[in-house]
Length: 140
Image 1: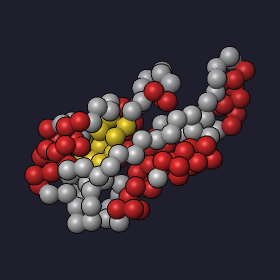
Image 2: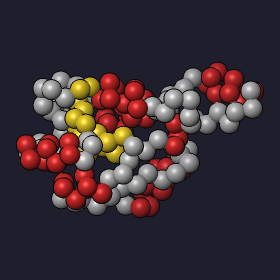
Image 3: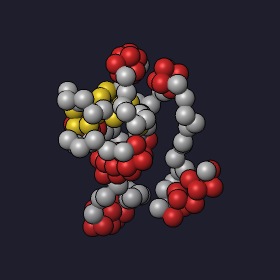
């Protein structure tokens, strides 16, 4: 798995290889997570759209590459009420990817794409060139 992560990071020109943790009991995973932004994908009606939770958490005026994001994605069948409560205790906000309930493996791709977009991964080429000409690094 580490080889796949490394090769994927290289192919997509990432500066760092993403961390992938082993499956863990929810309480243990929630308790040990230290990311600034913690989201729990939820199918419940009260969950806020992921976009609404990410936008205010973007570091104002800072390089977004320094932001840490944790996304908890449950197994098929969803989270239990007890798991929702524990996640909330440890600072995880319920986030929805839309009105449809996605399979776990699809939710992973959708959540990562949404996070990638929110953290300015899809900046326009002319924005990057402008940053470079002003002395900025203009990292994608």
